[in-house]
Image (cartoon, rainbow, N blue to C red):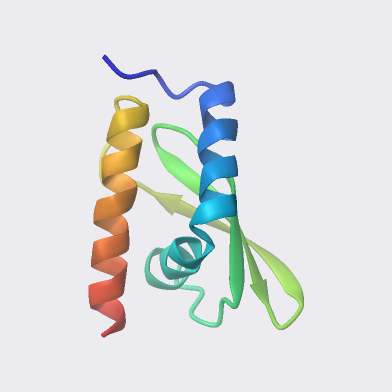
Length: 94
């Protein structure tokens, strides 16, 4: 069984996403946060209901909250959901 999404797990997921998947965060902000002018984004937090991003638009920082389509069960569910959302965001961008 995977780990529940605690504040410590949120911090770990955010660190990983910010260091390794910044491009995905931009796609999330544009596709699901309706912040289409996003140039750069960081994940601030994630919990079972949503993720909070910080999007950069022309030097301004804008908070972006993106609700998930279901309540995440655990960290593994978060991983799979974020991958699915990235695929969907990329297809919306084409």
